[in-house]
Image 1 (cartoon, rainbow, N blue to C red):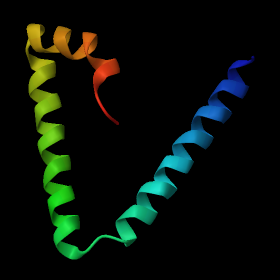
Image 2 (tube, rainbow, N blue to C red; image 1 turned 135 degrees about the vertical axis):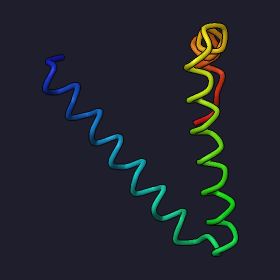
Image 3 (cartoon, rainbow, N blue to C red; image 1 turned 30 degrees about the vertical axis):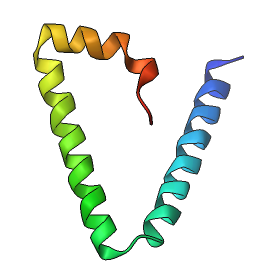
Length: 69
């Protein structure tokens, strides 16, 4: 498998996830979208704080396979 092939498959998978996510958002009510946005911002803040602490970043790395996407 070449590097170009790897990146092509990877970007195709990301595109499919983005389309699935967009379709999911179109079926959400405005309240559900607001809650989803709050959840996203909270996760983003949690990851930022985890990266700043050595113990947290180690735990995050070891549990990466256990986290839902």
